[in-house]
Image (cartoon, rainbow, N blue to C red; front, side):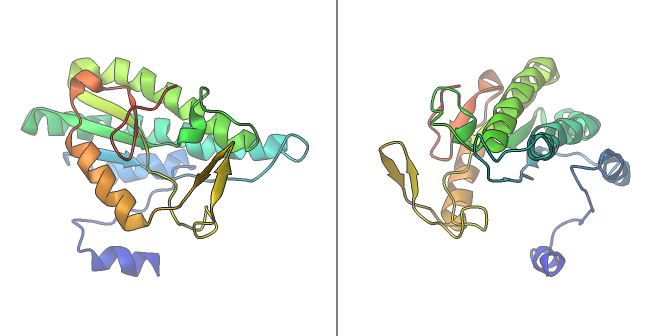
Length: 202
C-alpha cells in the first residue's frame, strides 16, 4: 500500500532503503550514484514505550539503532550526492527529524529509549554540521510538532508537565516544515528548530 501511495506522488525514483540495515543504505546510495541530492531528510524513527521499570536493554539499543545510528549511516553514505548538489547549486542540506523530547532542558522523564536516542541524534547532527560546513552542506534538527500519527495514537492529547499538547495534522506539520526548511542557511547549521521555526533549547 505504501509503495502505491509513493508512486501516486510521481517521484523521480523510488529506492528501497532500510536505515537500520547498513548494507541496504549503501546499496541505495550506490543505486543513486552520480545523482545530486539538494535535501536529504532522515525521518525514520521508532518509539518503544517504557518507563524506568519496564525499559529493557534491547528496547534502548533498538531505538538508538533506528533513531540515532540510522541517520548517521544514511547521511554519511549520501555525502557524495550532497556534494554533487553543492557543485550544481552552491549548497545542500540535511534535515534530521528529531523531537522536542530529545531536549535535556525540556525533559519531564519517562520514554527513556525515545528521549535518549533523539538526544543522541541531536549530538550526531551537531557533529555532522561541524564536519560538513566547509563543504557548504548544512545539517539541521527539526521537531515536526506533536502530529496525529500512529505513534501518537492518532493524536490523543499529550500531557507534558502542566501543559496539554493538542495534536496537529500531518498536512499542517509538513506545510510548516517546508517553510522552515526553505529558510535554512549554512550560518545556522547545527541548530534545533520547532516546526514553527522557533529554536528549541538543547
